[in-house]
Length: 366
Image (cartoon, rainbow, N blue to C red; front, side, top):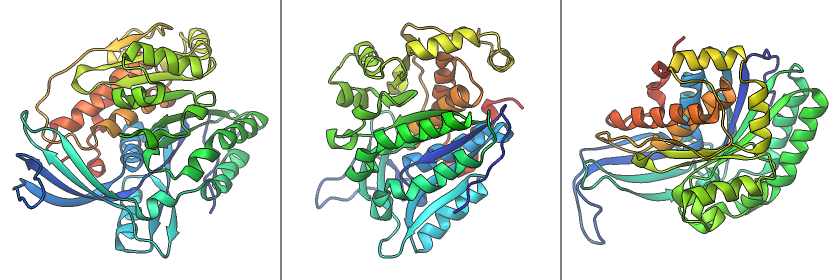
């Protein structure tokens, strides 16, 4: 498999790694049925999904010609796998999909409420091929990317949907991240790394704590931050993540409609201060009307109220907006998180929004 090379230094090449599933989405449920019960839905449809897959597609929609996006995951040799591959191409995401002949493409049954009374979700997931991704599937193409890309280029690797990673991959992440960093440094390539666990249980984040000193950015929701740090208070969780990141890892924690918070690492704060007057930061600030000043204290993005037709994929859109701003346009972290929240809100406002519809492209001006 050959990685595409030669991007210029003012653009970033994203690699999104993680889960890729075919979702069976039932929306507008008045309630989640108990065993032996039935309920009605406004619609039931199949659409491409998986947290990392959604993030990659939304990211391509947001970043446009300012960069490029590759997606890495595992599918089966079946019609769902072929459909997911074609959707990536359609959305201008370069597919690096490993096929597992003996496994089916992963799938997820999503039960979603459709009003303020029943706006929650439940999931039934069969990871299938998606859960078999290992570092050996990734190492060659990522190393080739770093070896062949022009010096002074920017590369960002986002580890998404980590809940779906098997224990072998999670265990390999810390050393593999170190190797990729050393290779990038030897080539003069600016490499940054981020992770979003998309977790609901403690075993979904096993091994992630050991990656914090290699990550540049951790993004998670309140539950994921508590599972990772043991801290129920968001501010304390942010401080703990940054402390474990040994000066490198910044953190962003979302809380749904209640907004989000972020904390910049000392290393990132120093770099941001040096680049505060850069052309990219200035133009990004002008486009959003926000002063391009970075901070090294906890910053918050305010709460919002929106009629949520379906919250599926909103967190993935938020991740895409955050990455597009922070790693793509080099916006300050708080401003990037604000863009992420705007992307998530945009997703909520559109009934049965699909990551294939490129609904977020209007959030950036050309």
